[in-house]
Image (tube, rainbow, N blue to C red; front, top):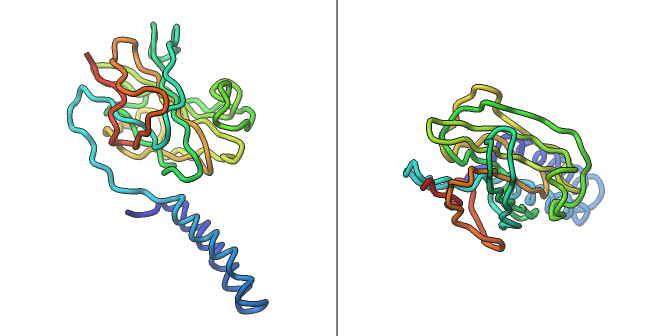
Length: 208
C-alpha cells in the first residue's frame, strides 16, 4: 500500500494546521485537522493489485459499485453498437484510475460542465469529464472520468500516443465521482448493476 503524490500535499497541509492549532491554541483544536490528514492519506491510497494477464480480459478502470450497464447506439471512438459500464465511486473508494486494456491513447478530450452528484443518471452528459480512447490490435475502448458534486478536479498523468499497460495508473478524480467505460458490443460484459469492482483487478469484460 502506498499513497500517490497528490496525497502528500493535502495530508501535509492538514498536519501542519493540526500542529499549529495544537501548539498555539489547544491540543483539542488539533483533533479535526489531524482527522482530515488521516482521511487524506486514506483517500489517496494506491493499493497493490494483481492484474489478470489474459489478453482476452478487460479489467475495471476504477474501484466502486457498478451503477448501470447500458446499450449505446454508437461511440465516436469505438464506433458501432457498444455497451457502457458506469461505476460510481464513493468518498471511501480508491480513486486512482487504471487502464482497462493494454494499448495506446488515440484520443483525449476534456469537456467542461456542471458538478452534479455523481450518482445522477445524466452526469455523463452534463458534468465536467475527461475522456481517453485506448486502442490495441484487437479492440478500442473509451474511459471517461466524470466529476461529481465534491469531485472538482480530474487529474490525468497521460497524453496522446502514450502507451499503457493493462492495469496501469493514468489518473484520479478527487473526492467522490464516476467512471465510465465503453466497449464494443462484441465484448461480453461480465458485471451487472450493483456489483462491487476493484480497479485493475476485477474483470468487467471478455473478448469473445
